[in-house]
Image (cartoon, rainbow, N blue to C red; front, side, top):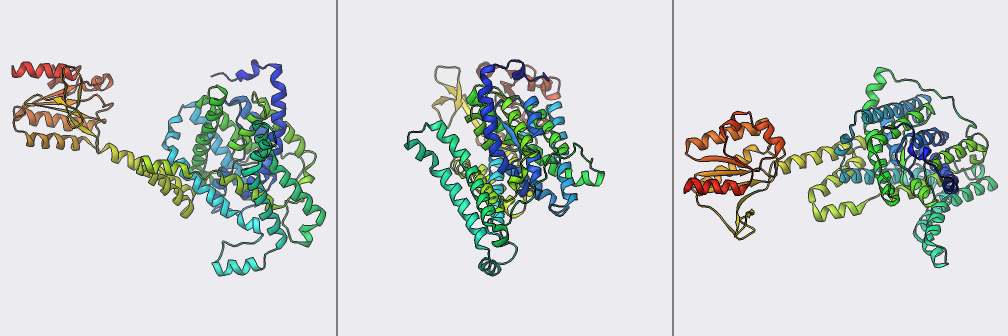
Length: 563
């Protein structure tokens, strides 16, 4: 693996204009998102800005995506808040320390996964489970922001209490919050259509629509500042954002902290990796580029370690920022580096501009961003095609909403694995016969085929292992009971990638029992890796000369035997 990024050595000057434009536009979007996602994680707003500098630079130099923008992300922010809520008070110094250590542990895990090439771990999180998890998380995030949007806590008590609280709510906060939410929704729904109707090209209209939310943020900030609404209307504002950067350091977790954080860190690492790679892959296809999973592990891992040293929290790829980055003309990761440098300039010079930014508009920004993550289409598709996957989606989403983030993930993964084992334990089996005039063999229930008297040819469309070996044996015994004239049993192994020790024992016993009944047991189309393990076993030795390359040869053998 090359440590010097290929794009850096092959950079062309004509790319610079697009990278600079994309970097400037992404910076504008990162400011409200960074502040909002830090708030969602229960951290000071400036930590979201810190996580938008060094992590981006590190990923740009070590990752494999040309367009992905790395930084704070809504789902990971929720996971941080969920993991740390039982351990410390949100916003406290200890809470901040734990968030930094969570980022450090996640980063170290990702780097180790990359070095050990353990990308398969992420595949335990199927698309259906990920979709259900994100949908449940998005719903939690959206409802969780209503307190800030309306300026009152309405979900901590019963409905009657919520109604009384709403009567005493501060109107100015509601106007700003609901007005911002409505404006952002209208922009998302109709902005592009209006501009296209006015003759603006589709690409430019789309880019302007993504940029438009910053106008809402600026407008509400100006209104609060000019009208002094933080004092006269009780509107909660961001307030003082420290100017400059914190020192680059991190406090390593002790053993008790490690025991409390390792599992949330692992889940954050896997979720962040799966989502980031999905984003990177989707944009790579559009740009006709390639993504290297092991390099993504390293890039994201080092970015999270850099975030920890920047006094920030776990980061991942952002679909919205990555989309803007690509649409704005980004050609290489230099666009991300430019965005990080501009963010650095902003943090060290003009953080006072954020003073009057209302929390209500940040909540509206979060709600609009996460609502688009609610993925009902995946559930509908799964329901039509595979009800088991649909139930996995539903169980994951409800688990996240009703029990918690970690529980939701475990429910989804456990249910997916249970469904996999259940399906494998009930393999499809077909008695086959020969298609007339050919050497092809098909299911007797689906095709007009010729069968051979005295021969049972059974194809098992699954590997044989502890969960299904007995089921296959019972099927053979049942078929033998239906036809007492059978004197040859052929097991077709074309779909078997594995015969485990339990299955081997079952087949060995089956062969012995059949031999006592003067029934010859045979195998056909055994795959090479399976045959390598089978050859020197008692079963393999006993079946010497009765393991055939093809079903056709097995049929010829039986014909000769029955001569």
